[in-house]
Image 1 (tube, helix red, strand yellow):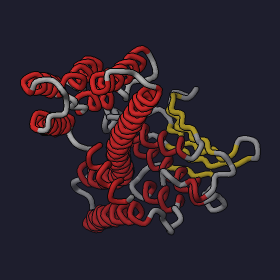
Image 2 (cartoon, one colour):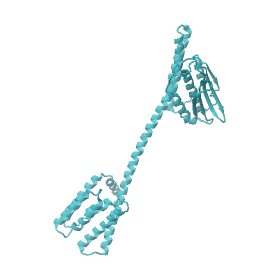
Image 3 (cartoon, rainbow, N blue to C red):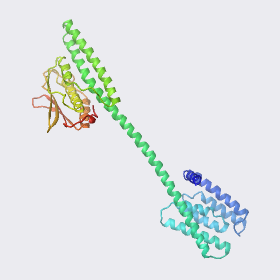
Image 4 (tube, rainbow, N blue to C red):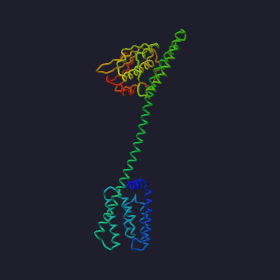
Length: 378
């Protein structure tokens, strides 16, 4: 039984042209045997001609199975060769129950009965039962084979589609990860490079500064550059490990800006916040300070972190109007876009707009129940 099933499975997976060629070869062999024996009481020339015509028609079994079955029925009557009739019925049985299926049934029964009449010269009940049984067996077998073939093709297409969709999901995941890395790199580099620019700018506008101050500023530039490299290494480690064990230090961030000569005031801290919320708040303050330097150079900045049961956690970075031209009047706003996406992933929102005093206000809101496992953007 296993061998039969394996053989049937191989046949069902063959190429249709290969099956047609094998069918033609089989019918041709039967025609030779029918002429040699012979299988019909008619002259051998008639047997050979009928067999060859029906054998040639078998090649078109997929396109016109009803016509092949009809030609095969006529050839069966004239030559006694049942091959083309059986193949025509088998090939057309894959059609849904309908007019063509009924035509095949009629052709099959008529062909078997006509052959019996040619052999014996009469019809009988046994001949009718045999014709009905033979036709039914061929049609049922052909229907099963066609259904199995369609199922196999459907499963193969589904597997290929699933593989393609999985490949697409993998590519999307890679693109999302690359975007996340880019946002992290922007946050870190924009902040640190801005600090370096501040220190370097201080040296540029004070070329006659005392050596002690120059040494101190150069040391700050070197320290900030080292911190930038360390942050980049940490980002790569976070992306590989999936979490960051170091709690963000907001006070140190503000002090680093104040040490560069900026007027930054801090109200509140991150100590009592969940790690996911604290990371998002830290990034918002970092982005706000960087933008204040770019677009409101020298203006005082106020950082505020508040928490309430109704509003959750609110982080604001507000700068007063600048009295001098902006250090970097234009920007790609990539930092704000990445920041908004980071907050969205943990259920928060970000707004950025002018305030009533003519300055600029960057505000982020996060739900008070944000937990560590939601730190997708951190």
